[in-house]
Length: 122
Image 1 (cartoon, rainbow, N blue to C red):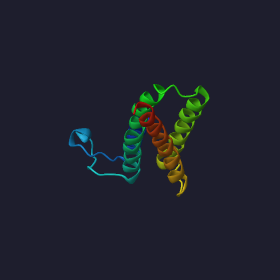
Image 2 (image 1 turned 60 degrees about the vertical axis):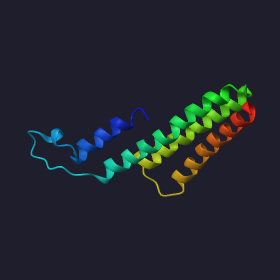
Image 3 (image 1 turned 45 degrees about the vertical axis):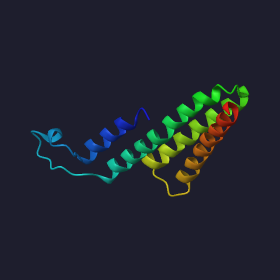
Image 4 (image 1 turned 180 degrees about the horizontal axis):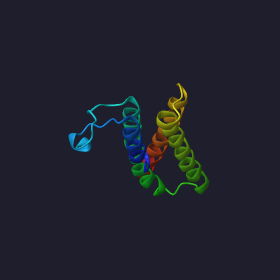
């Protein structure tokens, strides 16, 4: 998620796709969009929608005193799934189901941890 803004800038410069008038002052460039830029922006939004929820759920989950190995496996699998999702969505675009599988794995982990948290605190 940290490098998604940088990746957006790289694509904006490469494609000369600027959407704000102040970005092109003094340049002989017209405002336009780029599918590459929009793809990276969608991937970034998807990261924000999923990773931040996972972080909040993780905070509750670690207070359930889970087995260390289980927690490590869940955190590692989520991280790997999100890296794969971001890579196949915005860096090395691949056809489905690569993105869908990584998305489902990460969401299943988040749902599992949410369920464990709810059951523990009820």
